[in-house]
Length: 171
Image 1 (cartoon, one colour):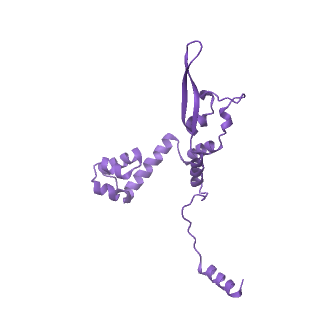
Image 2 (tube, rainbow, N blue to C red):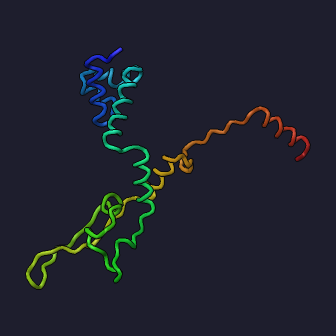
Image 3 (cartoon, rainbow, N blue to C red):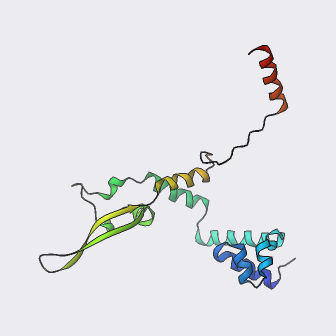
């Protein structure tokens, strides 16, 4: 079975921002239908969404491995790489790529006029990205479990019986 044109539009809209409710509204569904998420329970729609996500990952070459490699590079980046041999900050164009493309959340420059009258700017402040968040994302990605909010413990009756017998023996 194929999707209806409206369902196809929903899938296309979903690929824009991965927001099912907003995609349903943009595809022309009522607010009630959008809120209830009815489309998400249709196996045909689910299949089309999965195919769309896979096609995008194939096209962009951005997948779980790519994300994990980027996160690992960010976690391992050394601030010393931003400094020259004299201890001074390197110009931004000489920073390692990992710093230029993710670890710096913002920079502050001071405008200056040199003795020759030429205008320039000096880097004054670097705001770093949240590296703890990077580690948390890695931990969730590889299922370290260090950031689990809830841990389920299932004790079998056999184990419970053993513990009860051990308590009865005084051990």
